[in-house]
Amino acid sequence: MKNLNKPRFLISVFLLLFITTVVYLNLDASSAFFSSTQLLLSEYLGWLIIIIANGFLIFSTYLVFSRFQHIRLGGSSASPAYSYRTWIAMLFSAGLGIGLLFYGVAEPIGNLNDYPGMIEGNLSYNASKALSLANLHWGLHGWAIYSALGLCIAYTTYNKNKPFRVSSLLGQSVENNKLLAATIDIIAILTTITGIATSLGLGASQISGGLNYVFNLNVSEMILIALITILGLVSVLLGLDKGIKRLSQLNMTIAGVLLLAILILGPTLFILNSIIQNAGVYLNQLIQMATWTEAYDSSVYQNAYTLFYFSWWFAWAPFVSLFIARISYGRTVKEFVVGVLFVPSLIVFIWMGVFGNAAIYQVLNNIGNIALAVSEDVTTALFVLYDAFSFSLTLSTLTLFVIVTFFVTSSDSGALVASMLSSKKGAEIDGDSPLISRATWAILLGVLAAVLLKAGGLGALQTAVVIFGIPFSIITVFACRELYKSFKEEVIN
Image (tube, rainbow, N blue to C red):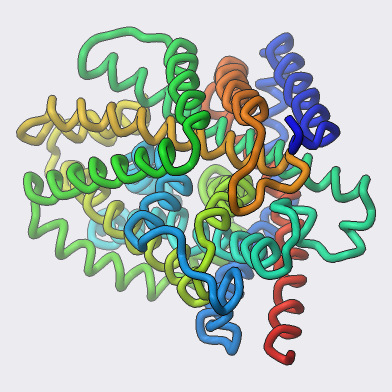
């Protein structure tokens, strides 16, 4: 309790409980509010979201080749605390997890169904476009957001000895204004909890849908959230090395097994050829796709897909970036950006290439009902895909298990980060954050996920992300500006 910053902790807890209570007591009105708010934000601020997301990618890529690339986080004598393999596993589990399992099939097929620019009868173009859009939403742009903010946090903490907080990134004038600094950190906490709650809701929906589809078991999403929140609570109390580290390694191992299984059991040559073709299409159309705002179209694809995904990355940024910074002591700027931006993006491209193309192959060859499953119940899409493969029951069981472990990893690492943000010292390298704080955030994550699902299902979860993600993206822009100034000063000196 000694390291607990009571104002930040208590105000954040109060606001979350207040929001949760208001939503729960006004479910119908809340659902309508979430729907209208997302449309409003997307319509009036879509252009800003596009600019900021592209800006982070340009900034992060520039740092790899800049004169700042050899700056080491923690000073010239610092050495990394984790091996490359463990480091990548931990940051990937925290940064994606449930989302990739949920949308690995649903996203490419959803694009094939809904994207307004598809050309009737041109299957090659449509399939490549569907995968390119999926890579846009899950690849470089998203990880660039984590990379930019994570580097800001790591450098400020390890090289400037500032507290492990978002307010520390914005310069001395913000730090000296205690009210402003506290407000920024509280926004970061609310954004973190809401962003993770979204993924927990997605995970609970997919587990429930999978259990029903595979085993004909009707298990309430609320019960699943409660059970896995308890597992997350146990893991976060065990700490970083005993809980999150081991679960992350397990996550990546099982995910790798699933990936290889689909590649080997599926249409292997089709998948390999498609991945190469998709890479070319993605690189060829990257600038066009990344700057498309539907200015001359009456469609709403951009609001429902690209703007939502970018906002989701913004909302996850304080959580994932703080966590990545926490485990990245001793890395150089170049190592950090390559490890956080390019390596996970490559994993995403491979994952989408294997699962997405396996699903598209079924659509093109009229195998199963994968397109219908995505349209009617997206939570079952991955399990419907497995129906066409040998060992489908084994694949489904492994998938359900790894969704649970990703669920727990997201919950405990999110609770750890929220605890850092609400501690006095910001929980420095030793991770000294109070147990009562970590336990409180782990429980609140589950409560918020359950209430948001009750208030409007996946739509409510998505809108909550947009509401909190957009303002935090602006804070991150100013943090990057301060980082660049600090890098210049260090190189000059």
